[in-house]
Image 1 (cartoon, rainbow, N blue to C red):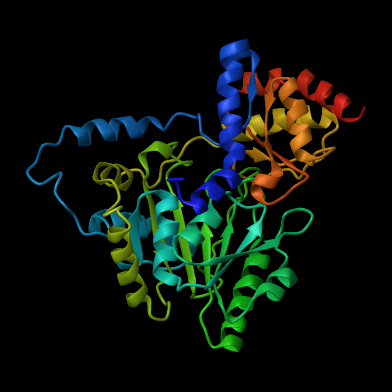
Image 2 (image 1 turned 90 degrees about the vertical axis):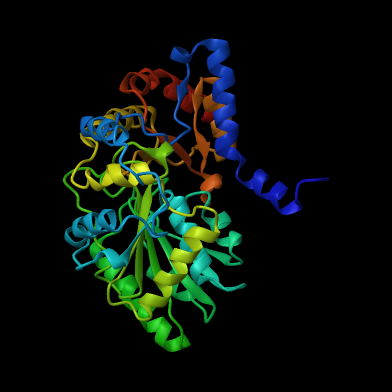
Amino acid sequence: MTVAKKMQAFAEKSSWIRKMFEEGARMKAEFGAENVFDFSLGNPDVPPPPKFGEVLKDLAENDAPGVHSYMPNGGYPYVREALATRLSEEQGVELGLGDVLMTCGAAGGLNVIMKSLLDPGDEVIILAPFFVEYKFYVDNHGGVTKVVATDEEFNIDLAAIEQALTEKTKVVLINSPNNPTGQMYSKESLAALGKLLDSAGEKFCTTIYLVSDEPYRKIVFDGARVPSILTTTTNSIVVSSYSKDLSLPGERIGYIAVHPDMHEKGELLDAMTLANRILGFVNAPALMQRVVAELQDVSVDSSVYERRRKVFCDILDDAGLEYVKPKGAFYLFPKAPIDDVEFCAILQEEKILAVPGRGFGAPGYIRLAFCIDEKVIAGSADAFKRAMAKARE
């Protein structure tokens, strides 16, 4: 066999979303796209803000000498300065351009962080349910993933994290608002987590970094505001992208921000800048860096997702599904009335595509993405009721 055995195993573990995507394409071809309720993919459908197109057009017409030349591997200094100014207000900590690196999306940023921090065998704690690719990012750089469950409402379980900490723990990776649950961790729980990691670092004579993956920071509901992790510990790193708040997932533009008072910050930033290059990213896309520099105070209208959340929650309530109401992102993560894979199969019979929770480290749940036209969501109501009736037989 030509393909590495590890990659074969990875493909099997990460296949749920891909399987649903492929099945969705088949069903849409057979029954017509208007007759299939596809909630499988977290692909934002709200158009980018109008200003994006205006800025993109203006910058694309710029033919000044050197506009497409190499740049510093961490990104254009003026772009990082603009981002640092916005993040200082957002995170409640004064950041400068030297605290920020531009990356190829949040995924690229996470790989840069892991490459820079992990020695073989170092442990990274992730909280279940989790984004499916976290384990792969850790493995890419020789790390070992330890999965810790959240509580019944998907909030941080400090006692469980404390029990999982060892002298090999290097990173605790969180995602808030969370994919797949939509949960947002409270300011109090994050403060307690930062204190716990600092205490554990002293106990084990090491440094444990709190890394927050925040692509959904601006997709929040009910007037909520995402707390800052940079105020919880100096050993904190934020990684994010413009994939969701500007609806630009295909443009692969993101960033890393480190706490300005972090011990050995210079060495870490040097390592991350090098990783940005040697991992093959070299630097974040030049044109998109120039675009987002002018869009720091712009985002999509999250009220669109909030309205869809209400429509979907009403449908699930009527069908008898239990769930924790999401505070952000664009996912619902209801309990499956039976085995999650079996229930997804029943839903599929009703032309509903959902992803089993076990793909996110949480068997017994299903993920439903509501970054999809409201008419599709509304049209699924009877299908959910029929599926629930079948599951109860």
